[in-house]
Length: 524
Image (cartoon, rainbow, N blue to C red; front, side):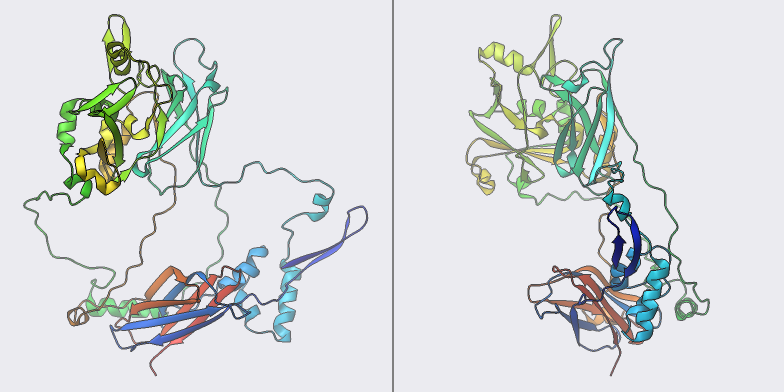
């Protein structure tokens, strides 16, 4: 849709209108079907797409195979009319695909009349030419965001010099960390990340000389725009083939079909503990499970590791029999580091490391080790961020030493393998904040994709199953990838319904051309 505007020298609009510009937007698509269309048999679909200039059309596309008798053709618009027409107009367009089913004079005139009556300004061009436009109130979103503010405890200086601190965030399930500055008012905003829904984030303020004592973190609630009027959906016919077919299935088969399966009663009498097959577990020289970790009484991983046989933490350096120590999280070596020093990471009120009280002064384990060893701390020392995690997040810790470390490319020292809790166990551990200066957030994230279910009749026993199969959608995949030659192979199994299917493919190529094709499949 083109917006043509006539202006005078002063920038005033004299005349304007919308015009549809027809071009070669469509790519050429071909579908070849191999295999029989008998009940419960495999069908192979070969898809080929080429650009208007004849080159292979690579990209990701969606393919759907539906029962033609049960699923009516879409009337709300295809990808072609949606991208090129209805998304540029305001209001409801009745049967938008009709305007592109041909290029006869009647359709061309009707499309022109549609743009004259349904046209609207997306931008006020005359005002923009005169410099009269409003700056967007919100920045461009590039992912999720967690915003809020901090408050210092105590009676005095609650909001004094808060910009000295920064907000640190850890996502334990995905081994991700991030930090952001805090302004003078205590406000912060963490953004630029994107994780699935129900992910838990741990937030805590910190400074160059340690954590902020007696601070509270308040996270702002998510806000969402109001939902506008949804597009009109055609009214369903009570006597439609789908409803009639569904009633017939229920009468013949009862409530049991492919969408409602009654399974036999299962009695669980004993839970057998299976040995782990993960290499970091099988090759470990020493192992501590959750019960042993709890009995040790350590709060953080760093404190726990220092109690392992052969470990030494002197001069701000952790070693195993004098050699370096590597850390592994759920089978992956951890390379994320954070600065560590004797006067910062193990201070009073910190949830990182164990504090030992000597007289009236609290000293960290690092300070005591330095005093006994007569060594100077390494101010530039860095340690993996996982060493600061509380033990409530951990389900198992293993120590790998000797030749078994070669599997991960480590040739000296030792590997501390950390296995985190998963699922509900991790959520419960994170839900209990270890201190007042820790906040747990779980903003709305993207939905984890689920694979479309379709039965496979690969064996004769499966084909003879008595469970009825009257699927209305036989195959659906929103991300079928065409290779560099513009080809893809799709396989699916037919159902018990008579073979009369619609195959549709839609998408946009890497060069911006639209792929749209609908083909009918029926026995010859």
